[in-house]
Image 1 (cartoon, rainbow, N blue to C red):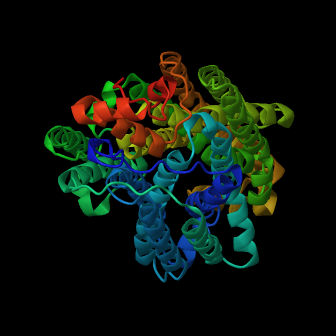
Image 2: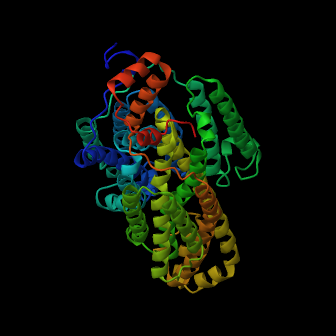
Image 3: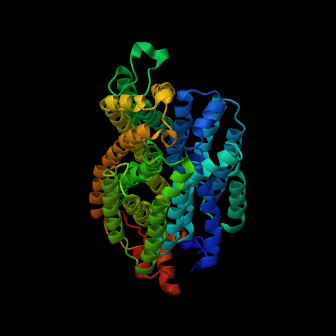
Length: 577
């Protein structure tokens, strides 16, 4: 009789469970990497006009500095996730940090808009890896049941980076100059690289032959790029070099070409994914009701998260006359709601093992927060505005990370990478498109209200006496006004107009939040397993040996039961959903 260490029963040794302290040490590197990747995008938002002005850039350059990062982050996220299922995840995470550090330093030294745009594009590739791989690596070291209390930390980091980044960027720009917006994150990224190397120890994965879906990568890149570029630029300016195509508005020949090209590339991408050996996004994931519904629900969460960071800051500055620093401080209720909900609900999920009721409550809070924010005016009591922001933040905190957790809990452990990054990808893509549509609605509403207020504006200008020509020129320049510096007569009009426009844009998020609630209600209420991804893979190997090799079956009978209980085998999630 063969020994227990031979034959088909041979599997990788079960990893020793990590202590709470070891988990926190390993998570420190992951959290720092995720924090700097998000901060790199948000910290420059308040200083971007200064940056583009200093580099002699135009409005097109301004748009591309933002769009380049969004494009590469969204496109690279599923690619990193797929690679995580094929190769060493720790090495991939460290590679993403190195790419991020190099690109960030390059952006800080940029001498022209082209160099800045290129650096930000590469930076987005690294940021996509950090965002996707941090979730996958956490699944390697923490079981879904225990992951709730740690998920709250990720939600808190995302909240601080998303909402606090613009405030930090404004302070840094005023104190040391805009280049330090890039340099300030470099030491943190390097520390993250060192901590990950020293503290993150994941079980070795069996080597297997891999193939990269290069055609799928190209088609996905083309489809997403065309779609995001169209949404970002539609209705904003005339493309002088393509004057024969007409204006770049929502209904034009250029729109037809870009949207049509995006749809065609998307269809070809689906066809390729059906036939390749190692698809970039395995379409059989959508056979899982949990994955499909989580993707739908994540889109609304992304719209709420990105929309809050963009439009709440504008509301504070344009509708309430706050400075950038004051606007950052005034969004603290949003941070508080997200932080308390992420940490508190994460702890409850770990303690009781229940998750669905919290997701339902979170989606209801999303609806309430978005709808209430659609009712605000320039003179709404700030205590009420703070309550509305808190509700929206709590809704994001209760849903964002827990949706990833639910998907990881029900997905085949060999596909954790693509499943996790898939949810993140669709959340980012949906959020980016949603925010762009909200921004277009804001611009259209403001233009409409300004046209209706011409008589009031003319009367206000006449009351300014000698200063009237100066402010008339400012209004005709087409640039965003600095409301806090306006005379009282003009400030009241503009605060009212922008408050109405921004509240109107929040109304767009409401139907998406309702769809999110419906999707969450239909999510299968599967119990959270206490096994990490590595342990589930161990169970999968043992199960395969048991059912496929008679000799191994006899050996298991002779040597006694394996260490897994029936409950643990069920929790391994080995059966297809």
